[in-house]
Image: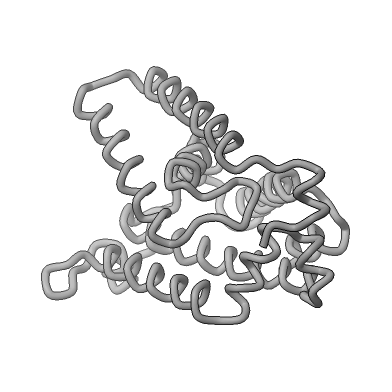
Length: 221
């Protein structure tokens, strides 16, 4: 919520606010909560491992959670006013404001929802590994997420993309990373390949979903 307010009311660039908040949270965690980069789940919390390692009717709980989250987000984005307004804001914030959408409260709500999803993802990841890995803060996972978004066909300028795009992007990136691992490609080469693919995808996205001053003035809802 605080980051959303900083972006909505302070008009700070989202990417810088997000990265700065990540550094603050990492610093607070290492200073006041745990000193080791790998913090194991404490004894007596066997129930916690069920989130990341359990199964329901033979299906991993992580898959069930992901499917339920995708379904919930699909319904919110496609069937609710909040979802329609989110698309409108992403497509053209100026036009959305003229039509009466309260952009700033919407931005705060969007970041709050994103934070809850990220918190849930962190629980699943910690449960799967039975530990909290603080090194993830400095990992290349953020580029994997960008790959999922861009390769899934979600417009970086906003207003384009659906939940199924995220699913397809996740599958594609999973195949790419697993394939390189099976082929025993060096980690540095894997990062190079991901960087090249991401760069090409961003260029293609800018060509497929162009944004210019004329479009911003006229609106393209």
